[in-house]
Image (tube, rainbow over all chains, first blue to last red; front, top):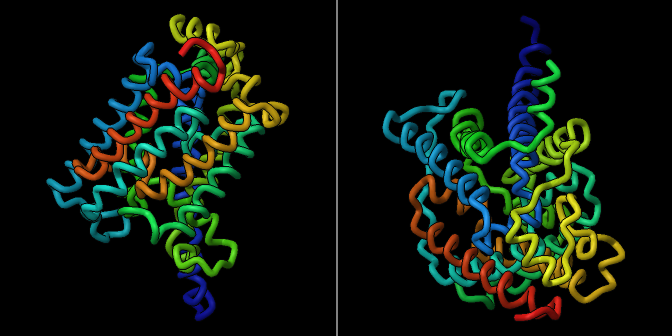
Length: 152
Length: 192
């Protein structure tokens, strides 16, 4: 093998790894759109306890994800690249989860979308949600500025 | 073939879409050795612009490049599912919800969101502005404060049996109920 080909190998590897994430994103975005979880109405149904759809959807998603995490931990499964898969404990900053959670919940019920749904709504061509995403970025920036002054 | 295409176009029931959404967690762990979570992308997108704020001073390409690709992929996935293979039928809303919303003056016209609240024109009305700009702002602010959103806390956090995620998800629900049952009726001037 020529020296040039050897030198190019890591770059090719990088592109391949990146493509993996893009493909997984397309997969998740497609299913999310077909699940209609990014509809403002579905979120209203959920917070009014008037449809089982979102509960079934999120519950089934958690169950399958849980089974996957359990299997990875139980059998010490490794990633496709041979590296270990770890799930770090989230730090016990209870106030941030409680306060931040409530603030996020208010936003979710108002906008009817959270970060993932915003991505698929824009992809689906529901353009007013570009404004919602811009506002979400502004909110994120504001959090970054005020971070030190908020309870965590 | 036509049947398959119809199945792809139409909305998927929760017992099909739910497990497929949950599968994202082990898929991402196995293929990418990464933990599923979407709201950190909002931080990465802010960090792209050089800033003096410490929260945004880090190597976003290195830490968040992979996740921005997931996020970008989702935009593509939404385009394929929503524009290439769109559902020909209007969105069906639960009767009780449609009635409650009608009482508040919000239409259910078959779109993903009511145009009376989510359109560029609605930005100039109080409810529309609060929903789009206020709601968006709080989603970004709250998700970063709570260090996760519906993906990172509700799906992967609960799947990992993380107590912090349970606290966050309870918070999501408290906030959602407050906004739905107090804030929305007040904003729309209906019976609260």
